[in-house]
Image (cartoon, rainbow, N blue to C red; front, top):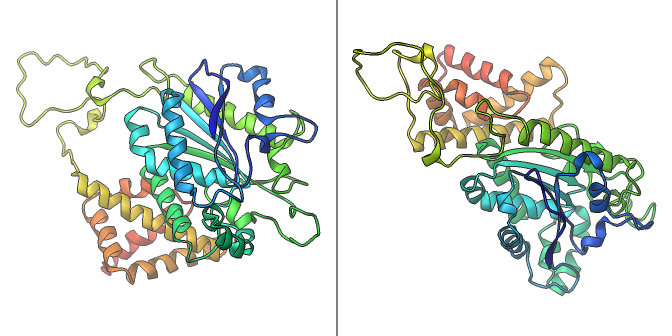
Length: 399
């Protein structure tokens, strides 16, 4: 169990490789000797990024060394090796490594925000976000050996730990304190060809859960998907492109004040850099002060609404529940045509009707004039259709 630097960053962006269950840092090594972190190190266009390989205790004899213990270990190494000082991080996670990382982000998001590390990338490689039937098959062995890690990967409604993580991570992305972008790769073949196991270890419904444009790596199984043979392998090329896009859009793009994205000021250091060309000598004002960074000229003299922390929390919670509901319905029903989209939204409205608390939160958002903020918190392709339906519902007096 350790963290190992392949190279430290010059530009503030660190790439963190995290392996899966019953594995080690060698999970990234191809049979020809090629090692994925080293392939990344040799990319001349990415010479300034840092590369870090995290490994943890796992295997058939790990007993009660749980996923929570692994998450705690990742937190400690994150501090010990000063990864917390990064301007951005991208986690490259195979299998259970993705689950470890998502729980780490959920548990430690307050620390990350406080320290200014808000730019996060997730490059998930065959990660069972909803669990795996393969872990179900190993259920008896897990019970006999006390293998708590394998038990946590079961695909089951009774898997409270994993189901809660799914909900917590969706809420975290909705909250948007952390700017999380991601890419999901999924395996193509069963691990042992056409042998006893006749389907993928991580099936597409579980490995492509959170981000659009997932990619099935042709000819890969659960093991080989993490071991690119060379720099021309498609999974490596996709990782390189993901990092370049992240650098361009999240870390190295200058902000108007000349600083770089990812360099977050502490609240006590945040001073408005905007200036005014108005001559205000002798002018008299009523009311309070206005923050020049957040108020435009059209707002001055008008009404400025401040929401208390409880209102913001209620709004975010309602948006998270709506997003989760739309996600679940979109997995059950098709959403290709306009009528199909309307059907999904209609089902969502039925669910809201049957949930008085959620309905009250949605009504509150509309009546308090927070419709735009509410809409922006729902990260789903059907949000526009949903908001139109809700507003139409209000117009008819059904609210």
